[in-house]
Each structure stands twice: as structure tokens, then as C-alpha cells.
Length: 190
Image (cartoon, rainbow, N blue to C red; front, side):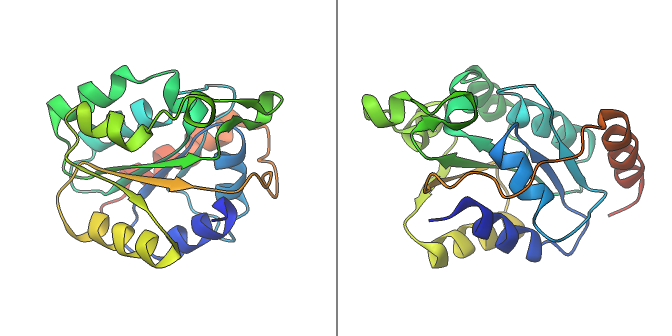
């Protein structure tokens, strides 16, 4: 499956000011290129592995707002402990989407353990206590899992095996603008 196409599908389903935290690199760039300039999108710059922890913080601070983290397999491997913390706290409004292409794509395409050792990111999420964790086998199942995340209590984890197409566009390098725009959007009621 293609990360850019699925990111666009996800953003197209968001109608209630849901927050989306784009992990560094391709996850972020595809969110930027998704065709919707949403104040509720937060674009990370240079903070590998922090999309899920930041989304967790937003979910706790904004319990009435659905929050999505878009995280690559390599990035999540750097912060696996966050899965146990999220499971312990049980934020009902949080969904983590794991884009698994088996490589650290933006650092030189070195293989991740999901490719070289068969590490199963969704199984790790389940073993961490996140019962609503599943792989999307195809685009239709991805849509169904996103639909479930938008209508039922979580936390949810959606794993997606993706191709290795690089991001389509890069974000502006303006972290202050991203912070201010996101803060204003989060101050608005859901």
C-alpha cells in the first residue's frame, strides 16, 4: 500500500477537528501534501520517535478530540516504551498508525528489525496492552479500521505494510508557525 494515498484518505475522513501528529520525514511530508491545510495537523521536525508520545499528550489534554499519530516503524522502535504507557493510561481518543516499510527511509534506507528480524509492530502493541491493534491487509481494511477509530473508544493501533515510495513534498521549516497554528486549532472546541 502507499503511505501518501492512505494519508490523503485518512485526512479526507476527518470532519470533527481531529488532531493529527505527523512523525518526522515521510509520515510528516505526506501529511503536508495531503491536500488539506489543517490547523489541527502538527508537523514534527527532527524529533524521531516522538509522534506517538506527543499525540498521547494531546489526547490527554483534549479528551473530547480524536487524535491520530502517524509514525514510521523505525521511529516507533525508538520509543517502544510509550506503547506500555499509552496502554496503562487508556486514552479513549488516541489512534497510532504505524507505517511499516521495513527501512529507516530518510536516514539511508537501512533495514529495520521488522524487515530483517521479522519484528511485528502490531504484536508488540498488543503485548504492551493495546488490545485494539490490527494490521490493515488492504485499503478497504484500512478505511474500516480508521472508521472504527473514529467511532469507538480506543486506544487503537493500525499497522500498515507500505511501499517504499518517498514522501511527495517536504514541510516548510517553520516550527514556530506550526506550534502557533496547532495551538490555536487546539484552543477551538470540537
